[in-house]
Image 1 (tube, rainbow, N blue to C red):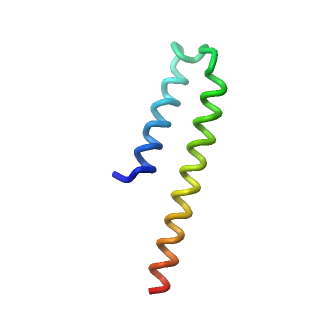
Image 2 (cartoon, rainbow, N blue to C red; image 1 turned 180 degrees about the vertical axis):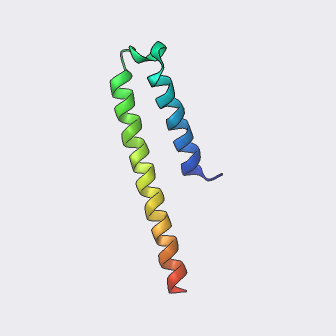
Length: 61
């Protein structure tokens, strides 16, 4: 299992907890969710860049 996928799993777990009614009305709900979404987008962008580089290297060899 690669690291970005593992981190995304953690983010999904956090999002699940935030969606649950018990946690939904917590004080930090909005900010934490916003932070996690930004964090997740950065990881996805990095993963896409990594895949692009792999393709470029593969095609150039």
